[in-house]
Amino acid sequence: MLIAFIGCATTLAPGAEKIRVTRNPADVEGCKAVGTVEARAPYNTANDAKHQMQNGALPLGADVVFITNYSDKATGVAYQCQGRPR
Image (cartoon, rainbow, N blue to C red; front, side, top):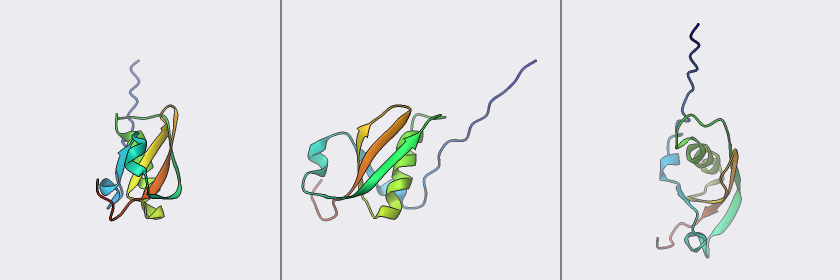
């Protein structure tokens, strides 16, 4: 008997693709923290955690997510850095 598990990749909400994800603290220096975001396993593709966090940051008005932990439960802080050079 063959059992197939088919998962769905996390798709990005419209506009979430513009939210940058970083692990470099210098990228959010001087930015305003607007909330926290998280992603939970299982991840079906390499980008699922990233996409979950971008989708979570979108309603917060964030344009950057700084990853604070990347494991089964990935966490990060959403920031507004608009107008700041990148």
